[in-house]
Image 1 (cartoon, rainbow, N blue to C red):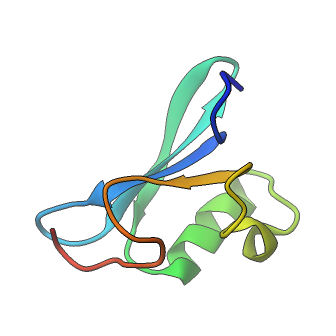
Image 2 (cartoon, rainbow, N blue to C red):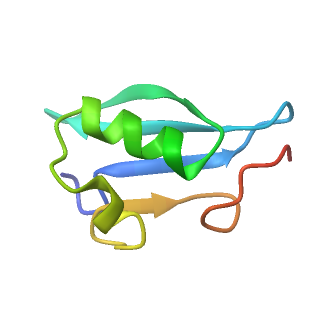
Length: 75
């Protein structure tokens, strides 16, 4: 981890949804385009997180960029 949270939920896209990335081995890996908290949890489970629901609001793990946390509508 380069000092920030290893999981980034990027700003909402014009068509809706938010890109989700995780930092692994110094590189950002795209997990997918989430349209809801449930999508985000599924992506994090697939990435190997054991308690993804428990970290969504923890800034040590998840950084919400370009919009409020848990908002998924188009920009």
